[in-house]
Image (cartoon, rainbow, N blue to C red):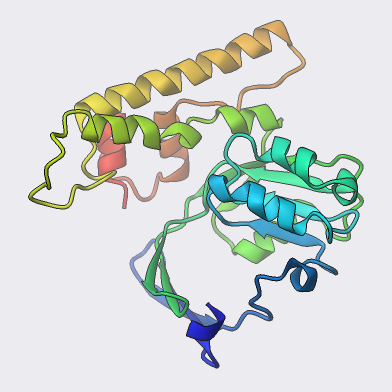
Length: 261
């Protein structure tokens, strides 16, 4: 990335919900793969990598992380909190852990290391905050809101189990299975669409998975009334909450996902 960017600015083409675009240019203060240079002095660390890469980054930053750092998974997906507690060592014992349910927007690479396109942001985005005795140097959620921008509106869920059980974290497996379960192994004539190509079978799987997660949340609250699990909602309701201005057809979960732009 450092070599590709050179002395140029990084360009973000930010597409607003009204169809207009805003061009944002900037340069990172540092681009490095050396955690001993990047981590010391940081009091806010945001993970924006896929879940499979979290462990490697946790292990890399652990020797250099400082007390009272705020560590953010954007998104976190189930397990981020546990890896953070397990892998950050002594320095991480007073770190606050912020786990977001999803990404704030969709992003597409236009030119690697030089330009990206950000598609319309979600309306809202929930997170859990495990403070663990952390004494941050700043208000946690307002600061992350400042970093992300005015949208989506960030909210705090009642607990981290709510974030782990939100159906958004298990959307892709049912969709992939439904798309490829009958594939004969031969090349397809056209590039298959993902969300826009959602079929009835996959949508039914998504509905069942989401319903099971909601039932799990309700069972937890019944057994432990002190656990507020109201933030765990069905995937269809999640789409209507987060994409209400971007969905053209809200008649069903399938149509909401297919017509969300």
